[in-house]
Image (cartoon, rainbow, N blue to C red; front, side, top):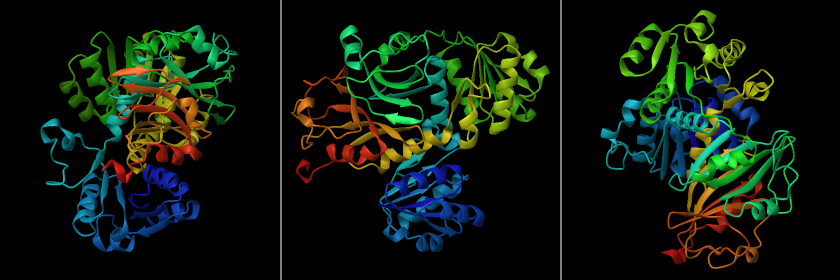
Length: 458
């Protein structure tokens, strides 16, 4: 696949890195010569210095032969125009744009980005995607990651196996026998820096990070089975009132009215605006690193501090200060990969990587076959994939034990007629079933083949 990426910042670099690793033909455009020099020196991609929305620059980057354009510059209008030019002049089949301003995405303008109006096939709002992830993490405090699939009926939760975890040293097959009515399947294990796609005879060890696919209604029971029975936060402090912080506060007001939220925003005008927009959230003007402001927010009584400013250092240091002043737990937004590696040792309880969320949304549209959703884990070591089985799929009609699935793939759930099916060797996939599975990076191409669209389908 030939892909043109407009924007060589953190998001553009992450997308280019992933796509180039999979032998795609990738061209990257950016106005910064330094960013282009860096990306071409470190990745197997072609770089072009110029404006991503200019036709001559797109032409030099090979837009006339591109299968997809992904516009992820910092400016919505550049991304929009780049897609329009790619459509009008170069007839690029798939156009993806990063849209940050929520004004464009308001429900009353839902038909704005359509082939008849502004021809963008996929809009990605990192702020909304990250905000939803934050809300899921707040709802399930025992999980280090939570993602929803199949019309939100299936969840993938990442759970750390602590020393008191009741299920360690127990073969996975035996877990199924001990809890026959629990709709959950361990699909992946991250152990000592390595990603393992387990077999039924494998077992969890203390220190493992287990990736479990479960029925949405069995999420809390699954967490409890792993020894995580943390209570949902009731008193929350949000650091940063940007798009993400505002989205999270507004959604909590709408969905969890019993939660008490205080929001700290450093910009006075923004703080005044937020105070006007939010009904039940206490908005404080000041720095998240000001001990006086934190005390004013009653940090010593906070169940959770969520740091969502656009500055990694403020997020990390502010959360560390909050913990020192008595906050029970912290959840921190960290953009820089180098900071993520030592976040735990710095006292950060949990962190969110916004770049990973955006890259996962892009991969969903890069994957071949009837792929409905993709979520990359551990910096792309593996993917959790939701795929739809067509009548021509080689999986349909056979018992799973007869399929001889390639190494590196483990099926976590089958979604049929709005019901969760926990798979075993006798399970048979039917046409139109949705399958949620865990696949190591080098096995993703096999997943695409298993769910490929055959010409017979048409």
